[in-house]
Length: 390
View 1 (cartoon, one colour):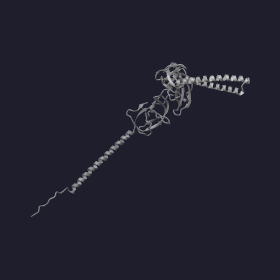
View 2 (cartoon, helix red, strand yellow; view 1 turned 90 degrees about the vertical axis):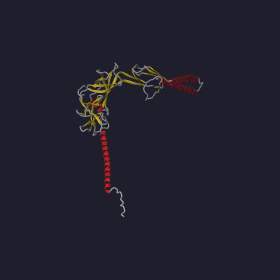
View 3 (spheres, rainbow, N blue to C red; view 1 turned 135 degrees about the vertical axis):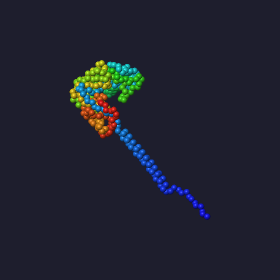
View 4 (tube, rainbow, N blue to C red; view 1 turned 90 degrees about the horizontal axis):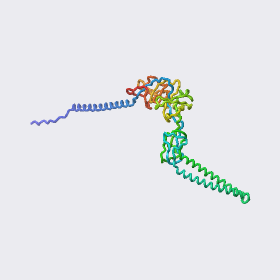
């Protein structure tokens, strides 16, 4: 009798297993390759963004030729002919003030009155001490005369008479010292009234009723400022290139933005006769009559000098100038987008614009408001629509 044949389920053969393993490996490699490629792409994007961010965007201005020979125009600062800050010379409280800003005052006119009770009491005591010293001096005078009379009659010794004379001299010195104290305190008491030192206008007042005033505090704000404005001083810095043509007595004209179309006559009175190493300019002073009060202390003015050869040069906005220890310079942009720092010579400063005599030519592309950190060789990107004129 034949035995039944036992059959077993056969598993996957080795060929199938190899195919599955190879497929899994391929998928794994594809996943790794995709990840690496994504990382490389992200890194490249970050580098591109960083590179793009590292290149600053700038605006450009073009210098324009300055023509005309209407003289040399420079900015000037107007100051009062005399100006005095009025401070207290003694401690006290403001009892009342008698002048306010804009008031015209005369020399010696009282501006404010202080209460100084300590000074009042010290003065009363000093006067009493002086009266005591005077009484002692009078007694010493009488005693000395009596002793001298008795010495003539040989009623007292010479030694006693000399002692009385010495006592008189000592009492006289004490009386003089007490009188000096009274005069000193009288002077301090006089400082409780603040007076104008000269005819002028009150241009500032910080005195407030009841406020404590401490004498000798240099950091404190002055109680009043009095300015003599019948004439005005105008200070101007003249570039070195024109300093040889500036002399005392020459005439100039002032123009102020609040007086369009009006010129004020001024006369150059003195100059520093030295060139400042920082600015390369010479400080000069002019004076102008101000009988109508149109000129105000602290005001800005354009000062025009009649000087030959003041025309010409290239005009730029003042914001395009780089200030450095070795002098002013500008940042130029080439066709390749690279920066070149170039030194320039400023002929004159006209406020919003400057006139450059050396270092620029027509067609130069100058960066407006360049950063202080910019250097030659840096790359920049020009803003769209940039390239205006100065």
